[in-house]
Amino acid sequence: MIIRVFAAGLLGLALTACDSSSGSIHEGAQARFAVTAVGAAHAGDEHSKHSKHSSSYITFRTLDGVRIDLQLGLVNLVPVEVKACTSVASMLKGLGQRLVSSAWAHAGSHDEAEPTDVLDALSGHEKYIGALPLEVGDYCGVVLALEPVLASASKHADSGLELSGHAVNVYPCYFHNTAQLSDEEYAAGGYDTAHSCVQFQAGHASSTLELDFAEPVSISAERHHLNIELAAHFETWFDGVVMDDVPTVEAEQAKMLANIRNSIHIDTLTLE
Image (cartoon, rainbow, N blue to C red; front, top):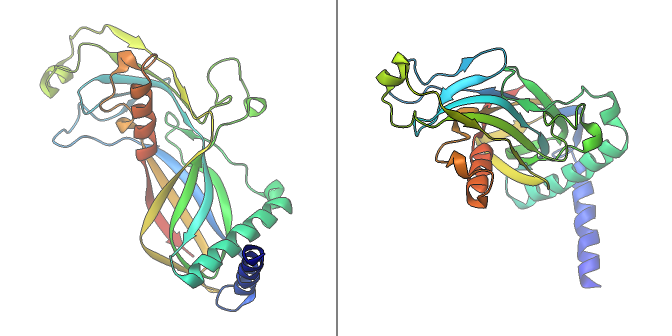
């Protein structure tokens, strides 16, 4: 009984916080999320380890020196929450945000929203992945989810080129005899091009990751549109992974999935 009364009181306080001038929902206030797959040169190199795009794949070297031809790189990233800064008031505001976010979803606002997309490493283009409503207050980070895509939502579920039932679907080809080459030897070419390819699909269940802002962001009646631009550094996805073992060794699969999660960072925040 005490727990039930406490929970009801907490809900009431959260709703009061939403209605107060210091934590009210500003009409149209929202955080908009987008993500871009980016490649970066490794330290001390000017050319040979940069990503090179063709019409069907991206070529780069891992930190271990292995040449990768990435032929598919899909990740379904979904915004879950913009985290209020931790204080009693902020916690109440965060609860209010989640309540309003749920109501916003059930009210059908998403039917009118811009269609969301998945991260595609080969596209090189920014992908819009969703928006969340905001209330006046201070925010210190975001919660994202790697969310599996239902088979019914995949355009070509049987082709292996979609996220049917998975959150991650990558297809790298890796060259066996490049790890020992110096940058100069690699750039000169003429090395043995023997290679293998492997498909890695993961994320059968939703999993979350949290990213912190460098400093708090304050949402006010005057400035209430927050654009959150994320970057996924695909060149790190295969670092330290024994590629030959990916199909059969769970530890290598877990390492690759961890690399993909850790590659996602906040690039820029813009408050309007």
